[in-house]
Image 1: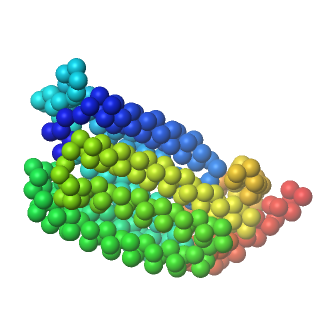
Image 2 (image 1 turned 30 degrees about the horizontal axis):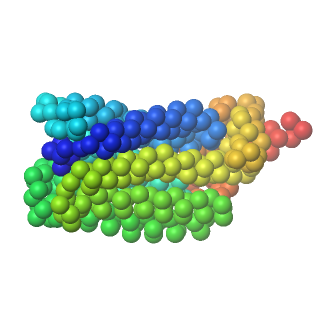
Image 3 (image 1 turned 45 degrees about the vertical axis):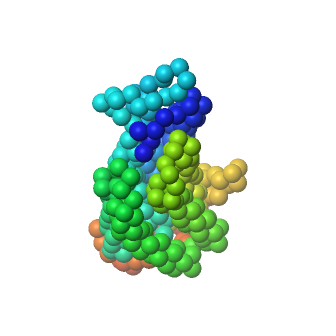
Length: 336
């Protein structure tokens, strides 16, 4: 693996530059997603928080990767050779990152599907568990049993790791297909694109994982493997979350336009106004038994919820839904 290879100055600098650029991109992604939570409806903001946490965790991991890359090699004047330092370069830092962030990527996907309540909780639990198993078994194959060019162990554990990955793919496509039936056309198309991006980026990792099996490992393959992992990480954590953020904006605007939830700010997407600001009317909401800024979903937290489509209210208590609609209408009439 990379810790035992010798690199030219150009190869070493290319990998180090990739690590630093990834850190900048991940930090920028964290700042963007956390600062734009207010653009979303209250019910979708927890997903935006997850979208921000993913690049933050990866940013820390890339800091460790960059540090171990610097300390793990010594410059001889013509090349970079393993330094023998206690802090050697290791892809293990990536697997620690992935064990946290990959399950969270599945949480983001559940958050934009047209599911709620027990169904959403079940999907989150199953998908996070499968994603974690996929990463842990991959770690065992790459960094534990298959570390010293044990290709047989790498293949065995890689095969085991691919089982939860295939299950996740099947479940992803099934749930996205079902959700597209109830989402708006634009939200549905974006959801489909988001899934294809995730599937494509996840496909990079097993290919890079198998490089030592298919080829005699060399400095060139080591550089290629690090660049592939790094590019896929940035796209899967920042590009993917950007599409998730777009879907959350679209669904927030649909809720506002349908009168389901107030929103203190207008919602924009690429300079297009999706929904005007609809401040909460304290007196009207009070008639519905709600506090200012609280929507019907949060008021009935803990109750069983049903799968929703655009503009529907995620409640199983029709009386509360009726009162909320009446209160919203009265508030709009008074503002006129």
